[in-house]
Length: 135
Image 1 (cartoon, helix red, strand yellow):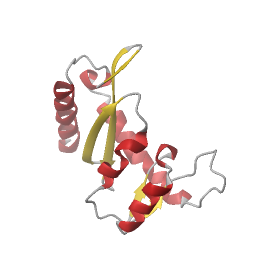
Image 2 (image 1 turned 45 degrees about the horizontal axis):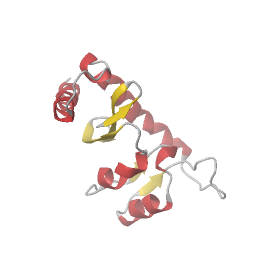
Image 3 (image 1 turned 90 degrees about the vertical axis):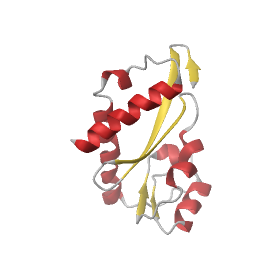
Image 4 (image 1 turned 45 degrees about the vertical axis):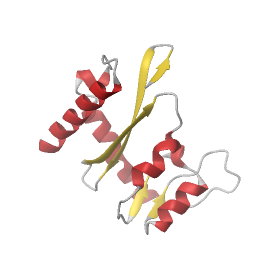
């Protein structure tokens, strides 16, 4: 996908349910911004809230989340002129996504990308995600 000084790099974007199980996984170049995959990640979901980190702070994404009928729980970036309010108690649930990534990185082949082709890497990431759900 992407190439950095260290070699091939791929960024994994994940949407999880309330239990931390993966619902959708998207892949992109490692040097690309997180917000580029955000609309595709939330498209078609019915949720009460969308919890994301500061990398997803953009007005167009907040508007898309509101149009889906969900509440955006996204902290403002430090350079935003007027920081927006978000539910800090609900934001703590974002650790479910981080814990999913920690479980995913327990698989050595996912943690250190050995595959040259993205199709092969994607296959092993999906296989690891299935193993996580079945545990």
